[in-house]
Image (cartoon, rainbow, N blue to C red; front, side, top):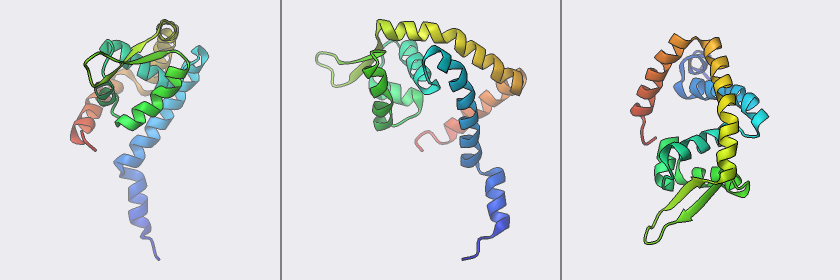
Amino acid sequence: MDIDRSVLNEAVRVCACFNLRRAARAVTRLYDDVLGTGGLRSTQFVALVAIEAAGGPTLPRLAKSLGVDRSTLTRNLKPLVRADLVKLSVSRGAKSTTARLTPKGEKALLRCLPLWKEAQARFEAKVGSREWEAMLGGLANVTAAAPDA
């Protein structure tokens, strides 16, 4: 089997999936380093922010806002529930489970919000605030281009 090296090099250079995942891992490391001092990983912080911002969303709504499927969301919430940061409950008559922060989860979020500001400032200092604003628009376009992927 001969792999066409020019196609391989092109894939490394321009592949959206390859490059976005690599960038996401780099950004995740930065945020994990800073947020870890407050006891949360970046994925946990993002989940707490999304839950609090939505005011106790249903799991399908939360999954959509985080851009993950329901099974991934359930897997990601388990450690937060075990740590008593998030409470899942089924409301009477409803067929959906909702997520809410516990008092301990609220404290963790309050503790980590200033750390998030620090991580965001570090990121923007490296990337540039204008460049980041432009990237936000580009990322919205990327998300809209593949909403169900």
